[in-house]
Length: 111
Image (cartoon, rainbow, N blue to C red):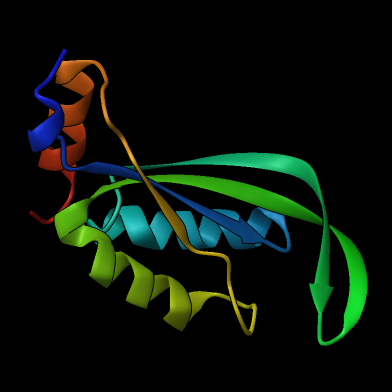
């Protein structure tokens, strides 16, 4: 297991209104080296409160793999490109993982 104190990988959760919007965002994030990989999960249902009303919609979930060092740039780029007024951007630290995969993530982003 890698040293937990030195693991710099994050999984960033975001949603998009359509699979196409998620793919476009993912392509840009990976091409610009803000993310190593974006896993796109279609058909998610969301129930949420927005502007005082309870809303429900179908969304596409994105699992974006990046590093702590790249997070600020990734967040800024998502905000610039995302079609939502207030996009979901939540970073979850990876505390352990396959060493080779974690190294690949770090090597694949602009660190």
